[in-house]
Each structure stands twice: as structure tokens, then as C-alpha cells.
Amino acid sequence: MATFVNPSTLHNKGSFIRELRPSSHSAGLEGSELNKKIESSLHDEPIQRLLKNLEKPNEERHLHLQNYLESLRSEARSNNETEFTIKALNIAWQVWNGLKDHFQQKGLCLEVPDACPGSQDNFMYTWSKAEHYFECEIFGNGEVEFFYRNRSTAEVWGEDTTLEQGFSTAILEKTVIFAW
Amino acid sequence: MNKGFLPLFLKRLSSLLGSLPVRLSARRNLNPVPKTCNIIRLARPSKDYPEKRNVSAIQVDPLSFKPSTLDEASTPPHLSVWVDDLTTPKQAYSFLDKKSSPTLVLRLKVEEVCKIVGISSAERKHLGMLKVIWVHLFSDPKTKKTRDLRLGAEGHSGITGLEEKKPIPEGLTKQQEKNLRKDLRSKLAELASSELLDE
Image (cartoon, rainbow over all chains, first blue to last red):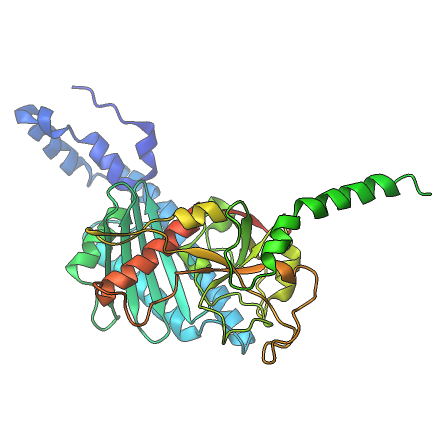
């Protein structure tokens, strides 16, 4: 049975693997055999190399975020009247790494969000994909506020936490929308 | 007489007459800005702006990018904006207390801002939460005797309804109130078109 891969899925690992697998309704015995073959071939060296390459853009975006936060740190140091503190930036970096590491341990790759500081010692990450909008607002006092909005269903959801409290199941369920 | 003078004079006169209804409306502090107006907002670009041209919700957060000549005591909490018939982006920039470089110019239509429906929970929709009002600037915000007469000061206005309400509106939990504010803020950001100040 020939397997055709949609070229548009080649930009990330998750969609690439999903595309390789037969759809559930056509699975059957032949499909489950194919699934097993795909699972075993994922450990082959050439496939591993290809999958690693698919993750590269996200690694670059991770470094870009790190550099961006670094540039804001020097701004916070050089200006006494700055609107955000180094503490807020440090918490923002820890929040990102906490989320990224959580999904990495599960074999998933979390999309690097857009980021911007506010003027009340706050900092915001935003993710947007199709109807899903998700934001994480971090404050210098340690508060971390998550907010989700579905543009199609008008669902809204929010939850507050701190680094010490960690990320609840509900927060991770919303975040996983942006992981692959 | 200089040949170029007359066309220039007529152009300026036409522009002045065209903005007359807006100028008359601007004389009444805290009154609504006409719905036909466009407003601009200055903000700091986000990390991915050069690549994706995203507008982040934090860029439409109240209390940021405030002009220093604002009378805070007698105005309701608002997001500082400028009516673009009366203030150019560069004029607006000159009023800012704290400046960022580069600076992003966000543009919004008053009519669209007023139409945003806020959502606090599955059961609750909130119409007419956001309003755009004139907010006068004063040369001395303490005495409030004379208005700021610098070029562009006339166009200062504000979007109200984005701030955290205290006490919380009846029937809403603290979390629902927070959801409502974040919902309004993200929708406002999505409505804005944007460009860099020197583009």
C-alpha cells in the first residue's frame, strides 16, 4: 500500500507522523500492521535525523525568545524608570521552560509563543492557531494568569497560578493545543 | 503672489472644515467620540512583530503609554488613544511619558470598538462594555485651568471598560470578571491594524 505525505505537514514532527499513519476508519488489520512498522521505523537513524530537522525551527525560535528576554534585561538595568523588572523577566523565562520541559518529557514540542512586556511589571506570552487563542500573563509579584478563548465557540476560560503552585491539568489541557 | 500658496491654502481650509464636527465634539471633556472617527494607539512591538505583524493583547492594556499631562484624578480609568483627525502618530509620540523604540502605531475604528461583545462565561455576554470618550489634557494637570495647547493635544481620548472593576459587577465571580477583561482586550488587539511609527 502506497503512503502519500502531504508536503504542507513537513514543517513539524507531529503532523508529519500523523500524516504517515493510516486514518482510524481505514485502519483494520492492514492498518495496525502499518502503524507498527511506522512506530519501529521512527527509531531508524535516517528518520531520527529527519525528525530532528523538523524540530529545528522551534529550537531557533526558543533561542530567539532567550535573546529577546536578554535584550529586555539590559533595558531594565539601564533605565531606572523601566516599566518591567528583571524579576518579571526571570519568572517569564522559568514559566516558558517549565511548560516546554513538561511537553518535551512527553515527546511533544510546544510552539514558542509571541512575547511582549507590559508597563505594570507584567509580561505576556500569546499563542494563536485557527480558532484557538491562549495567553499567559506573568507579573513581577509572581502571579501567573492563563486565559483561553475559542474564536468559533466563544468559550472563555481562565486560571491563575504561581511557579510554586505549578501548572494544573486544566492549564496543560489548554497548552497542549499548541504542542505537537 | 506665490503660485503654490492658493492650492495649499484651499487644501488646508478644506481639511480644517472637514474636521470641524470632530473639533466641536472634542470640546466636551469625557463625552463620546463620534463613531465615524478612527483612533490610534502607540505601543511597543512584540517579539514576533517584524515577522508576523501580530498585535498582542498587552499592547492594549490600560494605564500604559500615558501622556504626562493627563489629569488622572478626575478621569475614569481608560486606555490612552488619539483621534487621528486631530493628532498624527508623531504628535502622539511627543506626548508620551515613557517612550519605546521602535514604536508601533495601532489603528482602530471607534464604531468597531463600541460593537465588541465581551464574554465572561458560557452563559454571560456583555454588550456595549467599551466606550471611546474625549479625555482632555491640561498644561498643569493639578490646577486644570488651561488645556494643553501643543499640536495634537486636542485629539487625546480614551477607551473605557477595559480596567478591572472594583467592586466586581453583580453576578460575576472574580475569575469571570478577569476573563471578561482579557476577552475584551484580546478582541480589541485583533481588531487593530498596525504599522511601525517611521514606516
